[in-house]
Image (cartoon, rainbow, N blue to C red):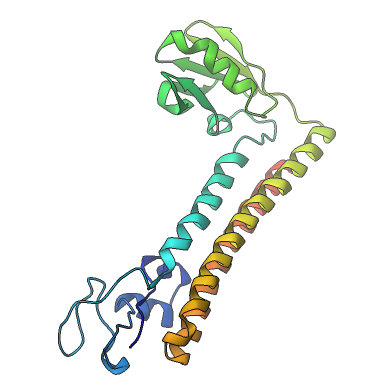
Length: 239
């Protein structure tokens, strides 16, 4: 009778009120169950018959689409750590991936990064044989950093940010934020297509509420992108 509609753990991000109450009962409408009995727990049990929910491929799970949105925001956050405001900080190298042992590897997995004065980073490699690959990776990361070999690893001078360089970095920040927004909106489009296909199989009020809550999730991720952008803009403009 009804197709499965699942608003999973992702809905906790929406905040207080109705969304939380939906999560707490694992909002699910099941085939062949009167909608007054269709509220079950997150394990799929509940209703008067205590039966298990029919959580099949025909259902809607917001988490499926939120994962892509979350990846977009986390990827943006990693990228912007490398947009230096001229102050040396180990986080500047968080986005660096080194070709180590045949696979792209986060720098933090193969080295210790520390500050060495106000405008220098020290990279101490756990395996000195990776020095050359690490140097190449830092130079290729688009961070405007030029490491030099040092005992046990590398020294990475962090250049003072000029007005021109700051403009370039703000432009790069804007482009990365737009990439993240595009990814979030693409996930939204996919989710809405799925919901549209379920529209005629669900009670109208349930379908509308599902759409509303899904839009709240999307808007939450877009707001996170704006928070990242605003914070980094302030940092880049603070010198």
